[in-house]
Image (tube, rainbow, N blue to C red; front, side, top):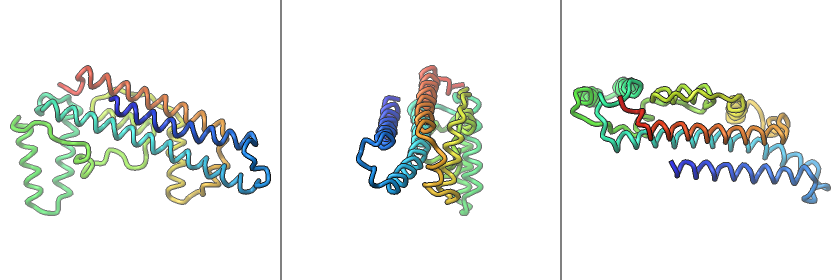
Length: 224
């Protein structure tokens, strides 16, 4: 998990740097007095950029954690019966979706045979997170506390913490991504104090999530 923690540290540092830059502008410490309009545009755009940065950090860290779980399961060469009940269901849904989404009948048969061999203990866990995502997307541009809880529960993780800031970040990010609101509109709606609070609470949330997943792996709760 050290690589994931380092990724979290880097992303937090990036958010800290931009927040501090905004503080300098707010305090008129950068000789922008003669460029009031330009300063306003810069401030609002950067604020919206922070929303995107925070959402991207959430998605990147959650994805890294899921990859780590899959890598652990693969390295353990777990058979179907050795997996916990939630992971068994996850595997079943993956093969069903892979079968249903395959246009070629030979591919469908191949997935059926692989699943049959797996439940018959003739095959060990070999499903990477990237392969899972080809047919079974656990989330798609909509990560907030509720969705994260649901996703982690699919692996048998009992992480149940939610913070309202994640939903705000997700909603604002989607409005920006879909063009429902401009960068300036979103930026004007958010104060620097709100952004800093969002940043602090989001990275604290992600740290606690990483710690919970670390315990899940260390205590081998992925096993039956």
